[in-house]
Image (cartoon, rainbow, N blue to C red; front, top):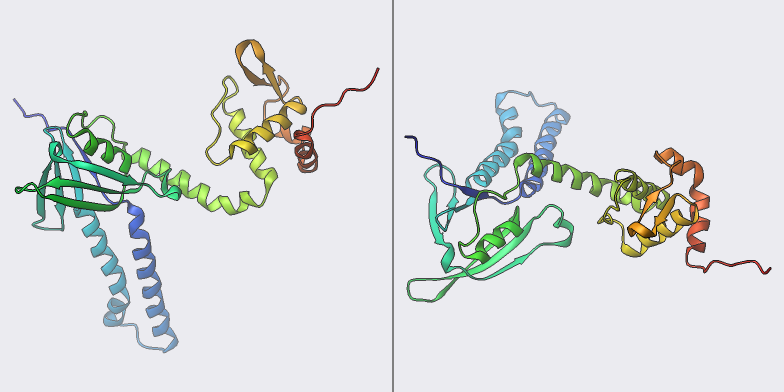
Length: 273
């Protein structure tokens, strides 16, 4: 009978740590290549190999990154591997882990990248400190370390496809953030698109929209009868005539949004009879 593979979860430093190295290597390689062209040097194999040396260095750094892993196993161990070829291997028993601290930079929170520090007593009972930086899925590794071997292993680690989709979404948000920050109307439409994606339920506030701004936009949508309250159901719904983003644009343009935002905090006035 074939032996079932042992459940485990493998952690690495984030692949984003390789971006500066590959960027630097590419710039240096292109600089060497263009320098050879400007000096009209014959591009023989030796000079071509010289221009590719920075990329080879980046490739070696990538192999080192691939070889450094932290593997949590179902039998209560954390296997630390370093290097390529005959790699150094160290086993840490999760039951010995003490004082786990994790710091996740705010800009990397959506990617789950963070720094982890903890202690393990040695044979003499003296604490040995470990400090690992830029770890992907740092929150999950913190959970495993803090549980000291009392949490299931192998069932909750995100897949590579989920990692890639999260990375792409975060990069898109980072690229678009300067443009969105300078155009309130585009941010407002992005917020409305979020509401249109969840027409039958009250979606949670997007992480990129501050609570005060989201509340102001909802007040504007109510004033313009794009959003209708449902007191009996404890929520709201979109107006029946609002089905697409174009329906919202026709009702509320950039100038109308600016005026509505200015009036959003004013109490409604009633004419005297």
